[in-house]
Image (cartoon, rainbow, N blue to C red; front, side, top):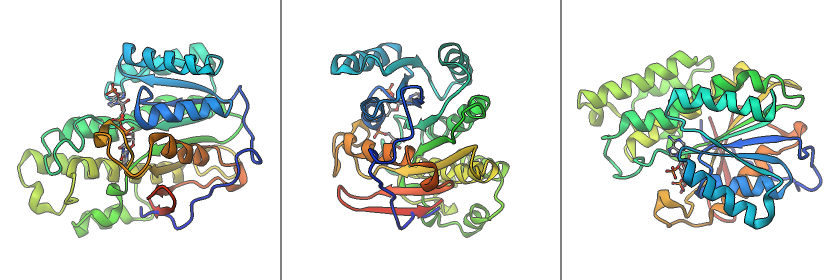
Length: 300
Ligand SMILES: NC(=O)c1ccc[n+]([C@@H]2O[C@H](COP(=O)([O-])OP(=O)(O)OC[C@H]3O[C@@H](n4cnc5c(N)ncnc54)[C@H](OP(=O)(O)O)[C@@H]3O)[C@@H](O)[C@H]2O)c1
């Protein structure tokens, strides 16, 4: 996927289709872009479930939002996306608390070891668990809830331009990922191939992305999986829309506070994408916020 050329940004006040009954889930919502996105959805009047892997950090974030006046809109549930048991417990807790319908899922977290050292692959397994296998398992666990939504269910995966296909230097693997009829199994095979190359110490000469290698491969795989999912559930008026969004260089813990813009700014753009009215809602696309003022998009 490469970024799209056009970033849709209609005025949300004129295209409002949601209400307080509309339920959004944001993963990794206790800080950074995830936290800002929970706040943005609450400001816009949706019910939003802030999820975090740590109870204390999640509850502290929820309390901050309540103090800012969002008590009626924000909720908290525990979710560690690298743990399959936590994912299934979350799916059951969600159903028990909110019923069988989920309208919006924003998969946002980043494994804390991603980017810790630009060319280390020391934590490749856990980076893949959080950034690739996590969203796959979560989507599978939540599919029955998506199907109950009366409107189009929206999945927005927060990705990165580092996961664009043009970062892949191995032509054969790139060719596999470019296939029009790419399958979920083929994406998993590529990820396992990468992990095998890491284990055997040959990843440097195999043409994987040169920078932030494990993080870039995890996002490349997430983008490819999103495209497969979008195609499988092509919504045609009802169903599922799946897109990816790169927030650009944003001032969060991941970048040690550096960046060209705030998490609130990135979150506002992500919310606009997640809330596009049905007639403007794409699927299988990759959008990128490159700077504070201009937008670029990419093909997944
Ligand atoms: N910031 C940028 O410049 C930038 C650029 C491109 C893409 N992105 C993407 O934007 C997204 C958000 O990143 P950010 O910059 O907001 O990072 P951040 O401030 O470091 O926040 C990351 C969040 O992910 C959570 N997390 C990590 N592992 C988790 C797990 N196993 N289960 C549940 N939650 C987990 C963290 O929880 P804890 O507090 O418990 O660790 C935290 O809430 C990521 O997908 C990242 O790849 C960011």
